[in-house]
Length: 131
Image (cartoon, rainbow, N blue to C red; front, side, top):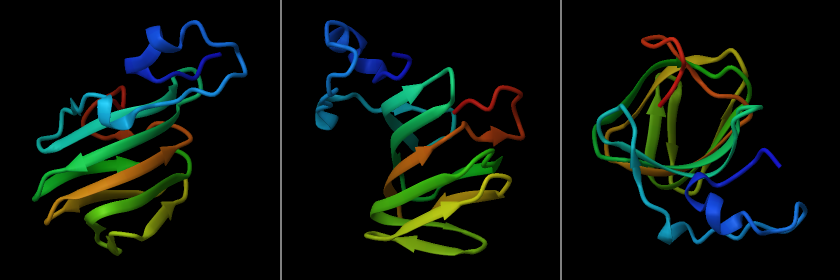
């Protein structure tokens, strides 16, 4: 199986191929991204396909610079607000963006966001698109 929870690879190693992978989200460490004020917990990723489910913690005033969603991206805002030039997605609401869409995202008041990616974003300041 190519999908995994990066911080639980050893814990999940002995599971059968079709077994559920339980993830204690509170126990996962927050990882800094290269963008100030934005941290992540990768809940599931498949590096071969780019599929991932990620919990983002945005500090007040943090910004995710110019990037393209190379395939559909979905975000559910759990706390705070996430905004771009098209509008604001507040706590309890959901936004999805088609592949090919491009924007800057920001969280003036901070946010906790659960995001689902079918492929990684493409950032225009680096070649590999990494966070």
